[in-house]
Length: 290
Ligand SMILES: [Zn+2]
Image 1 (spheres, rainbow, N blue to C red):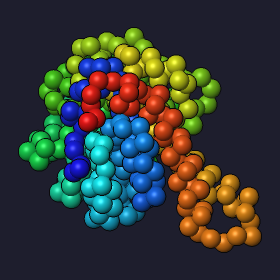
Image 2 (cartoon, rainbow, N blue to C red):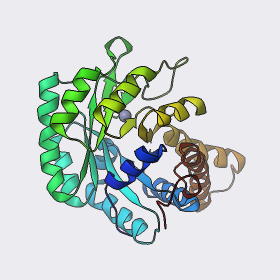
Image 3 (cartoon, rainbow, N blue to C red):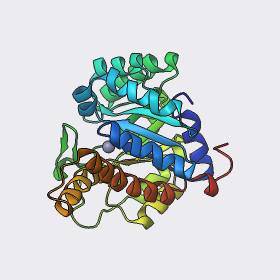
Image 4 (cartoon, protein in one colour):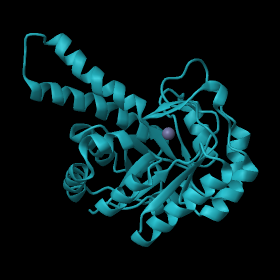
């Protein structure tokens, strides 16, 4: 089926308290692994591309393999541009067929964040493209965005309400204490703040920095309103480890297709686990997939 935007998949997830997994792909093989995992579980899924990945491959190459994979798939698939600060790239993705985009203007002063977020919503909505926006500073490294620990700050609920009511996004990413990359020590999640923001904005919340959180943390965040969970670092590890492990075990065999297969299996296995945990499978909610 054709690609769809995040609107109905996220509103259903928020209403029924499960989350749709959003996985950052790296190439055709990793995209295929995400789609195969979602199909095995009959679950909706969000394929995410970082700005860096989009620039690496180009929008038309990615759209080409996405269309091919979506056309033969029975599950709802959204193609989402993750953390992007470049309005030109956002526009190009919208024009090429991405069904969802994220404008990350969270490092700007509040009014500027609001103005940029609104500008992207106005650009995207006529094309039926959904928009995610961010408030606060999520610690860690994502793409070219580096936030040091001393610069991280949580989203303020008052500002969250103001930002969401005026920018009117489809999905909201408030900083609540999670981190991009690999966690050093136990993450401190501000559950009270997450709950307050989810209730007061009534917009599906995106949980960033999903790799490395415990099952309990995921379950609690989802129960409080996180309807989209981003997983990026896990895929980077599986991508490299799948390759290296296979080659270490078969170090005289130079058959690239077998290595690509091993990488696919490693990626897909981890994705199946996450989608199952987030509750997005057809067995665990009511009738999203037919
Ligand atoms: Zn993120």
